[in-house]
Image 1 (tube, helix red, strand yellow):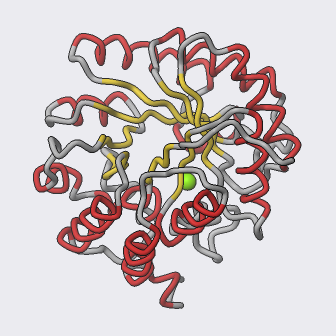
Image 2 (cartoon, helix red, strand yellow):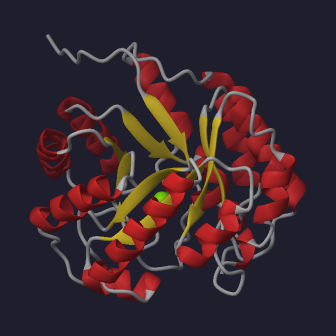
Length: 294
Ligand code: MG
């Protein structure tokens, strides 16, 4: 009989940040706040609200401070924001947020292209961010992008991903999320990476962050679950991609993930009907879903 000894998983909702950041037309702050409210109402208990990235690079996230200002950070949910670098981190430190999310890639080319740093330089910065974060009682969650493959380099050796994950754990990151940045992961690879890494991490938690890959993403979820993963990143409505941006597919859809876990008797803490409502609202904000992406 099919048996997974897990009755409860965590969904890490990235819609307000990862889902919306690529939208070209600025989405009014109150609409982003309404999406956050609907997600919270549906039971989402971990939400990535925004990003402290320079507005020149991601104008959609220019209202980060306003978003933080208008969300009740003490309502029992865990709220956080992405910080692409030290500058963003220092901005986030001036807010009441108690958790930030860092990002770097396992592939040198992707890390250089995205962050203008080598992997070693990024790791050095992660150590410094973690050091300052500890002084301020701020928790650090860390993404490792291109963990399952890189659009420029192709295969990314598991050893590299493992070394980065262990270095991040050592630096102090309490949770590490493996990103399948451009939807290249396969189910067997998803199982192997998660299974091996879970054996090597001593105390950091491990999450997975899959993007749409013509349905293969759900097989990757199941394979990761079987390997022992219980934390899954997703975006309501599957937002985050644009068919005209090569390599940038949308995030795995929260509502489908919830439906899948529900059908398996696995508790997500999220209401199926309400998350569909939030997903419907999320897609209404997206030019891609309205068919006007360019
Ligand atoms: Mg994503």
